[in-house]
Length: 239
Image 1 (cartoon, rainbow, N blue to C red):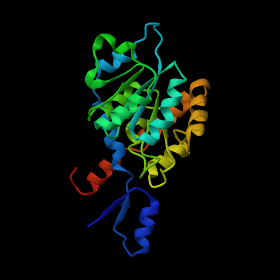
Image 2: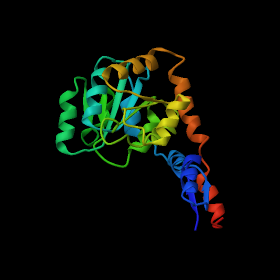
Image 3: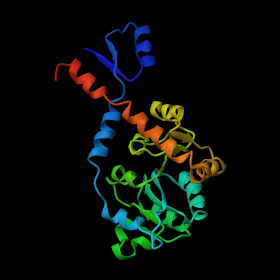
């Protein structure tokens, strides 16, 4: 009976086909990730992992839904930056992939399934080898890297952006409107190789005018894009 679309371009395409029962509402996924953030769980094991004997909180990068092509880029950089801690939530958690990640790591690491609370703080990398935790884990990071951009396409950038942190991803993002919009507002950054990743990370880690404003831009982008669900519900007379 009626079509609800994300943007004016979608409506125009439908209008050109003679379809006029269309309303632009935006993307309901923004409402979803905001709800997920409100319901995010406290994760004591992550807090323990982030503790430091020196009492200084490390910079934490959360790599969500990563693939081997992604790990080959961000793990070498992690090795060179002792001020960082890394949380990797691979897209695939089968044995071979986990072993390949561990083979690359030169700093102390542990799988979540094998972690002990008393030695978590001594680890520099935590590998999340279970599903269902990533959306709650992002809250503990300052920078997010979203995997898939060197394959079929990037995974969910909004899950990380909602926490107000800059989001990095590979070059195959053009089919994802939210990724293009994140880049436009200065909250998302596409990298094409290890060199461009290094350049952007160096900027975020060393330039005090880079990390916080880009994170703010990402968070504001999500907050300013909510409301599609309510618009749709009102128009179909559920509310």
